[in-house]
Image (cartoon, rainbow, N blue to C red; front, side, top):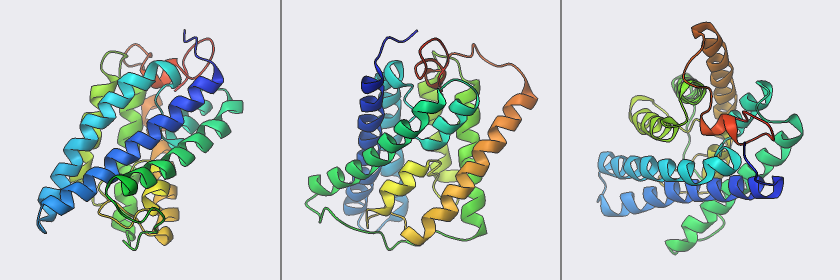
Length: 235
């Protein structure tokens, strides 16, 4: 049972999401600068940094807040009784605020204008299907992973999904929100965000249904399921 206060949990969600977005956006900027126009190399650099960063962030913040860093994850955990509904709004607010702060931090580190909006359109049925698949897979991993293996499995899945999905696997409404504020390699145009978010929520709902259909898995104590509430699972 976690002993973290609500304030500590919310700080962990804000800080973890900010650092995650700084990793995603910052590595995209660095990769694009060093790849000399080779998009595949830039994406590979972006992927490797995201995998490593996500693993570390889950390990560090998981025991405090559950390391959701993702409104879709928090919503699923609330629906499953692992996160009190009264905490869902504050969790999501901290995730969205952290995502925006992470984008601004990446810009500051690379000497770019802090305030930006992305012009990169990511839309169409293929992109939406990809986001549903990416989010469904992410939630299935989270729901079925054990405590000991959750961080590495989540990070590995996201790394793979960068390459096998047409959308490069945002799988996170907060990530879409933060990346909307960055006109960089990892950006997404504001007009494309609603479609991504709806697809992500649909994917999350599908994951819950598939998890129930598949039956019991793991030990039911992955980080997201054990740190959000006061007396038990919280993912």
